[in-house]
Length: 112
Length: 113
Image 1 (cartoon, rainbow over the protein chains, first blue to last red):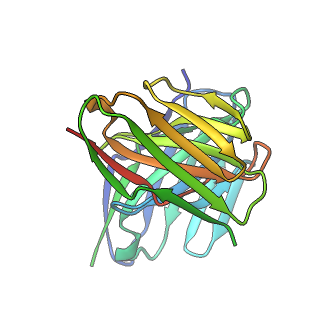
Image 2 (spheres, each protein chain N blue to C red; image 1 turned 45 degrees about the vertical axis):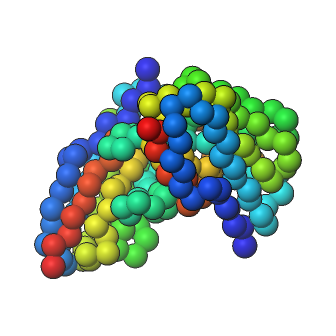
């Protein structure tokens, strides 16, 4: 069964610090990863997607992908209290059509 | 701009009662539509998806059913609620094709007592 594992489960960083979140697929047939952010009581909002090996940067957010290790990471620099949220990693598998598999998430808390 | 609306915002229902949740999307023709469920503290699970009117594929069996009566409307329902149905129900849309990200609606919070 395809699984998406995220670590750590929770993370506390100081305001202005760097947050690093990890996500690994259990199935080599993965072809897209997405990162979503979900504030408490709200719906997830898409942050970034990646499907090619390497790095992609958008503002304070950077995602890396290593297809060989089936691993993606999200890095948030200059973290702000408003970044405090649940970060969800989602993966699409080539064999699954429109199905996305989500990880359990990393709960990020940015302390002023 | 596309807008996605879900109703109701929240619902408290008794075990064994029926349920109908709705989702409409405006500003996008023939989107792919999805239903997700998120238990409190649990992962987001895709329940159903639809690529066209009248066609719905089931992903996870949770004693729920879905229908797409119109191009811009997606309905989630059951005739008999279980305690385990409690959670956050999210509708999402994407462009046609499989490489496009999914955008979520505001969600419906369901409590089954």
